[in-house]
Image 1: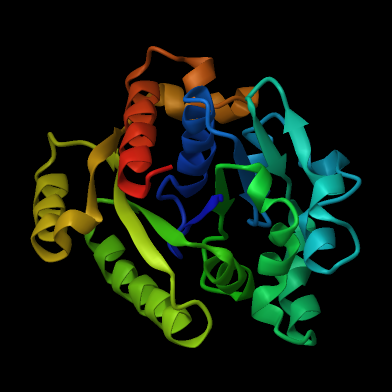
Image 2: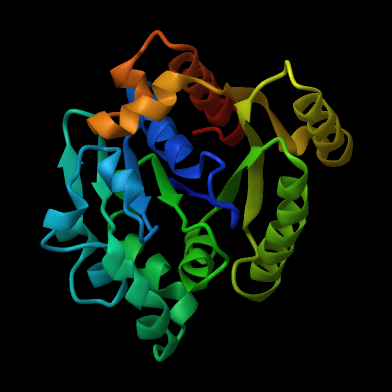
Length: 255
């Protein structure tokens, strides 16, 4: 039975999509069958996996609306060793399109039901907002992985996100859990990083993952080549960190 994990943070620029792509690649390298769902209208998880979002015949929006099945929309990327349910700018229409549907928050749950068991892990890259797409992802997921940059505004946003997770638990998905808080763009040389890091660990304890993702130029360069950093620069600090993250997630969630 697969584990479905939503990577979400309503604040942009925290390394959410980068973490989704590289965690997918790192889990696949450890012989897990992985599906990456690109639920962000920016389509960056698709592009970072070597898929041209502008050339898609079908996207995850078609699957959400019941106009295509997940099986016929999934792109099997042999180069990155995980499968992708791609997304693009068409997803901007999802907010309006889904509102008129019965049980609109469960469209993704229904869409993934037919393929989820073919994978050990399904990772969902959410948009940087708490909208209907994010609600769909949280409703469909077993757990939430929260990438977080160590800065003060991020702490404020984290509280709002955890409130949303709690509301989803109470109303539609009582099994939803927080898989962990992932510290990204981590630079322990700065006093701000150290201070926010301490606050995180003091307040959230074991919810904070041991793994940190460092600032690394190779991580930033990899998407332009349509590859995870684990393939673009496999011996870089960023690549090594994502491999460690994959192992920690395997232990934490028994993947």
